[in-house]
Image (cartoon, rainbow, N blue to C red; front, top):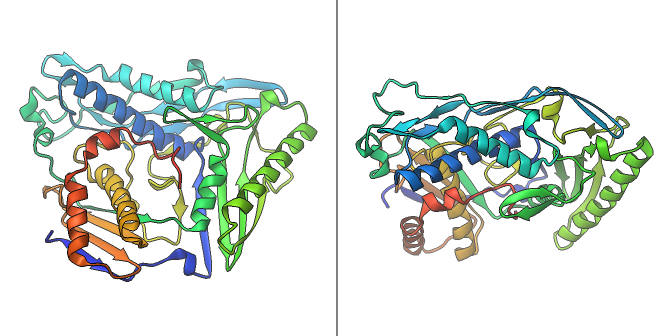
Length: 397
């Protein structure tokens, strides 16, 4: 692989004096935007594969959610104006004479996901604007007449000049940030489903490690319709804080770190009606939330390239957002190393291999063996099917 470079200068955040890791929970507005963009793209891709045998050009990576207006109090929730979901982007609307029915598809995908993760939401709570257009300078790019107007369906090339970065393994601080929020969820067929009816979905975790002391602060909403009083609210949060402290102690037992966990360490109560701050005017946009591992690790080498909502066939942010994470984990486990994988693509170049693939590890390995392993993994991966099955917000970090 001509563009491969391997170094032994891995930067380990766990060896630094301090480390800060954030997780925007499943119901955070930015996390909802990423997830909805992903769900719309998956639904569109699967439908097109089933009906026409290819995935036409599309990207919905500018999706917006927010601006709702609700009033809530103990045992009450009143809708004043609904939550807006605007599916911004572009999407092929036809294939020859076949109408791909993209407006209905966008609306159905948004509703399906939100009903899964936010059980209090009804269709009446959502004002969905299926705003994916077909505007472009390239004739027939989003109105293909036949397969010849979708050249990447048979010969995918990198759509952009961009960089994607993956790493493995997570540090104890990173895992803690992820797992403290994961405590509130169960996995139901790849979707996150709330474990506790009294707890809302817009949870945020901030973990700060200074030397061997770890402080975790969580913002956790109560569901107004299930809370009778402020005393009940305080008792609920105290119960979960105790459970989370026990979880943190268990997770860090062999790390040499000491932890303190606090939920809502302020007097003002955090209570919502629907479960997310999209109900009180706040807004979420694709690309402002977690990385593909489900966290925001500020001391990592990282990129601002978003993975959500892009074409899974040849959009490099989507493909190499996934593939660098997969490569990093596979290399780490195969060679017992900590590593960071950086992939750089150039618009119009081959998608596999990328223009540059740089691997940073914490110790030396046999270069030829590593190159062979990387070649085999990349050539042997059905990346499209894996991406279409991938939901990063319910895994294990």
